[in-house]
Image (cartoon, rainbow, N blue to C red; front, top):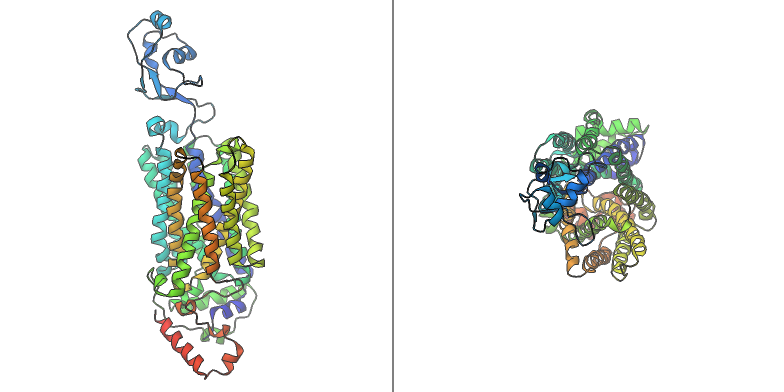
Amino acid sequence: MTDFGEILKHVGEFGRFQKFLVFMLCFLSFFNAFHMFGQVFMGISVPHHCNSSWILEISPNLTEEEQVNLTIPRDEHGSYEQCLMYTPVDWDIESIRRYGLNDTEDCRSGWVYDTSQQKSTLVTEFNLVCHRKEQTDISQAIYMLGLLIGSIIFGPLGDRIGRRPVILCSMLLMFSFGLGASFVTNFHVYTALRCIVGVAMSGVLINNLVLVAEWVGSSHRAFATITGHVCFAVGQMVLAGLGYGIRNWRLLQIACSAPTGLLFFYIWLLPESPRWLLTKGKNEKAKKILQKAASINRQNLPEELLIQSQEEKQKSGTMLDLFRIPSLRKVTIVMSFVWFVNSLVYYGLSLNVGSFGLDIYLTQLIFGAVEIPARAGSIFIVQIIGRRISQSLCLLLGGAVCLIITAIPKTLPVVITVLAVIGKFAIAASFSICYIYAAELFPTIIRQNGVGLCSMTARVAGIISPLISLLDKYHPAIPMAIYGSGPIIGGLLCFLLPETRNMDLQDHTHEANGIPSSHNLPKEQLVYGNSQDHEEDSIGYQKGTRL
């Protein structure tokens, strides 16, 4: 039986067909940044104060400045309170001016917003201020919950029905529900629709990664995968410009969602994974797609090679298989933790960008720009020193920087900011590496489940990351201490993982259990195939294929 890696070498490991596939999926990665971070600009808070129009019934000719001065108290810094107002009285205007007002209460008639900079935001339209201020963060957490749900659904589903249909269905959900969110009149409905967009986003992220990994040869897999990550970073930079130019949240929501609909042509052009088709016994479909790819790559694919690649239909793996086999169990636990700490620190640093002292648009531009060299550089580092060492070093650097920040006094904000940027750089690179590494560590028949489980742990981290920041009320160093210790533990655990640089993807669970494919066996073992050791390996192979 011919291994798929041999077939891919004859088709072309990174020919015109694969380059076009990566190019197509780069557009999807680019637009994904809009869905992921668009709410950052839609939920911008603006200056506001209580609506105190009651005093205009007493004196209609008051200027706005006089109205606010008479009815809104000031805080300890001399600024007008945003959530308190003076209790209305039945006095005449002269008495109010002479004696002033003392009793205060919460806003009773809504708020007045300064719309000179932002025409309309989620905050101004749904009054997400004062006692409802946390609703914006809760909405973002629910979106992250959607990503978690998507990992649970679309990881196993991709193994059962294929990578292509899951990507197409997820794109449709992102487009339709994202567009629908721009027309809602209730914030809870908006949050629910955003949650569904998060579910769909997870389906795209997981299956996009796996589809590229299964089409591209091992020597080019890192470049193909991280190219999409670089496009995601570029999308973040473009989003900063988009948010700067569109100051109405509904129009911005449309601008973030509608571009996904432009990719409808994927229905005709997006291919299925032939590696997945072979493991599911759909040999004719796999043969047709491989011949098409070879033709586009101007390669000759021998007919006998396809005949030799005929495999028995394999039953899809389950989450339990990840823990049933000892070697897979170790890989699953370590990689899940690596994804968890990556996500925890990535979002933890992103939520603490206030130390930059810059406006939100420039901050988003800087953070997007930082990720480009981080993610692009990881293409080369994983090929030079390998996946395992690269993953470990990036985690250790990111964790060490966070721990150093805990020792820097807040009187040195510039130093803290520089260290935070270095930490973001290291974690962004680590995130890209773990996507490649996870796709290579899990066998094809269970890859979606493995990557899906890792993605689930990352989404859990994304949900709890804002909660960790709340611990600074007990001690300012606690959040950064957590953000720093997690990556260091993860970096050390990486040394328990196998190296996958320049190795073909595993197709079955028996390969993950230490039984190599025939094309990877040493020459001596191929020549002296009747040895007792080889007979034992063959038995192990047969047992492995039935898992």
